Amino acid sequence: MIKNRTLLTLIRKDYALSLRGGTLFLLFGITWGLFIVSGVLTLIGYREAQQEREHAARMFRDQWEGQHKGAHDAAHYGTWIFKPLHVLGVFHPGLNDYSGTTYRIEAHKQTEVDHSSAGTRGTVLRLGQFSFALLLQLLVPLLILFLASSAVTTEKASGTLRMLLAQGVTFRKLLWSKTGVHYLYAFFLSLPVFSVMLVIVLYAPEGRAYVLHLLFIFIGYQLYYFLCVLLGVIISVRSAGSGISAFAVLAFWLLSCILFPRVMTNTATHRHPPMSRAAFDDHIIQGYREGLGDDGPYYERAKQYENELLSRYHATRLSEIPVDTDALVMQYHEDYKSRVFTYYYKEISEAFAAQQDFIRKASWADPFIGLKRLTAALSGTDFFHHQAFFTQARAYRNYFIRTLNEEQALHPGQTVPKTGFYAEIRDFEYREPSLGEILGREITAFGSMLVWIVCGIAFLFVATRKSPVL
Image (cartoon, rainbow, N blue to C red; front, side, top):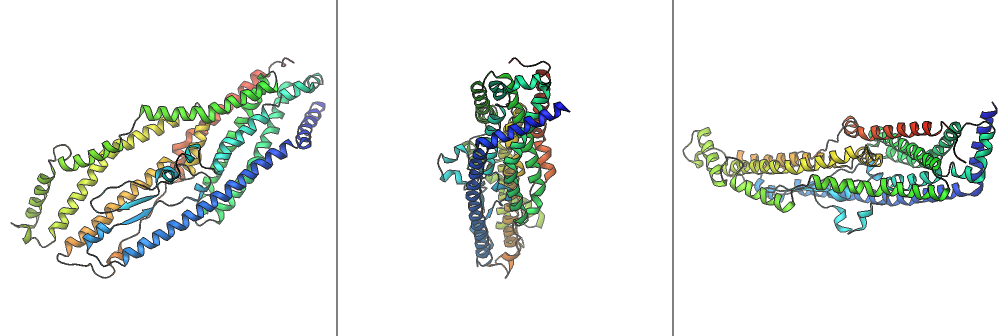
């Protein structure tokens, strides 16, 4: 009973000292102030981007439905589709600023997602966009590490540790009380941020579908913050003074949050380099002209397809076929060009996937990497969400062009399709990866944090078998 009272007294003392000195209020005030500024700027940017995309989508759809062109001219006129904005992208912009936001649909051309905002901002985005996630991933862990790293060194310097041990308080219980106190600091520091995010999600259109996404993000950050507290306490135990512990914390933070992730990213790029854009474009051109495998060059393929049409319709000349053969031939070439694009893009996609797999495995060595990947995945702004959008956008593009070519083929000599035909072409609908798919792909993030937490707890148990050197 006396030991428990002593521990409670110690906990109250820690809180009283933090509040009395004003240090905790200052840190919380600065951090929450930065969160407010970040939130306001991010929400303004999100709202503007959402309004711009909605306006552009309506404009292109109205222009498309109101045109008076033939099907082939309409295919060249084409349209644009836009990557949907994820409400949790406010929390973590991820790759959105680098991977592009729009996809151009046009006959005879296979394009990629384009118009990234990073291209217009120079080197500003190299340090990362000022967002909730940036603060929660970099600033808050640093504060937690600094606070926790003084847990034991302060008691040593003031002589309180010696008195507590003399009164019968075990070193192990003392450390766990310190760990609990500092984790509460971390919890209450981050709780208002996630509360605000929950309100944003609940009031956003279709936001309720992402409540579970936010819940798993919250769990991931709380695990990471608990790990930071453990590491800070361990540093405090192993340090002779506050100066040494502060230096160790800063070195660890720079290594785990800045240097190691950058090294792993560069290593992944070096080990799995993708095909260059120039080489890819050249392969597309040559593959279309010369053919894949034994398909033969462009003119041989076209002649072979024309012979197939003659055989199918039992005709001796193309003019005898009761459909527009030019439209059918154009669609044949569209299909072949799409096949060539898919063939060579597969190599690039596999290289990027290998890079992602390498970085994912690196999260076992650095849980911070796993936390960033998990946050981006649940926010819908990671590589795999971008890849899903691109794949679906290409499928829609092929449907779009095929519909126009088939309309021209079925109505030879028709200059303009029937009234309402363009309005009947369905809009692009993006299907997001499910929560189960995301968690299954990023489960390593939770696994790495749990392994590190278990190792940290085990270290504290071993380190507290005997009393510390005072």
